[in-house]
Length: 250
Image (tube, rainbow, N blue to C red; front, side, top):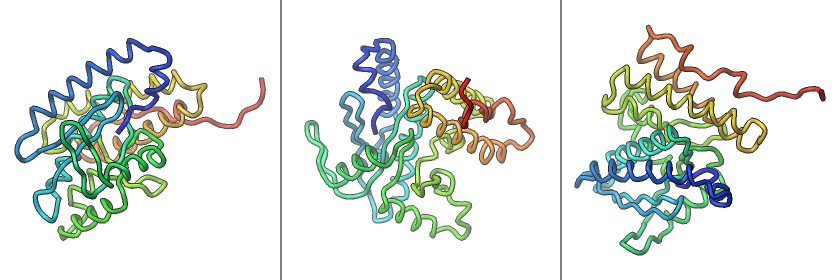
């Protein structure tokens, strides 16, 4: 994973951004360490804006491990976005060596290439090998729509699977209805701030528009399903803020 627009922040010496980034990063490192039990044995390396996670499989199936990976990556994405720090990345599957000083292996190369060339938007995409594993896991269930993988991952319009990070709000029932709504409102506010800020920069505006479309998709297809009596109007991002169209010269 890496941080969207980090190089530009360095060139501009954006001290407030780096203070926010470091404060949020420290918060997440504490969260990861707290949850990094013998059953969640992550290895993590951070270099400026680059994050490398390694997670060994304890059996041939890897379903629990991918579930653990979803939880930690989704939590990081959501926490950072609420601080206006947007992440993109990729998950790959192969041998990987990590120690205190070295990270190497095909998994790292593939994840880097996918993140830098294919992720494009603030999303964490999956390699084709990971997609196959997800399909195998879903095949364990009589009703595939009832499988956790059906909710923790989505397929984007370009065909890439990606981490449905907002679903962490429903995962393991850790959040109350009030907390979920609060988190979604904070997520919405961050996206709107950036849509307004970068409305004249189409390259960046397009990335935040993707976030807005994903936010609305989640609210309609997850929040509304879970809480059908609640109104969505305050949670959704208005289409007028997301779309751009051809216009006349004024």
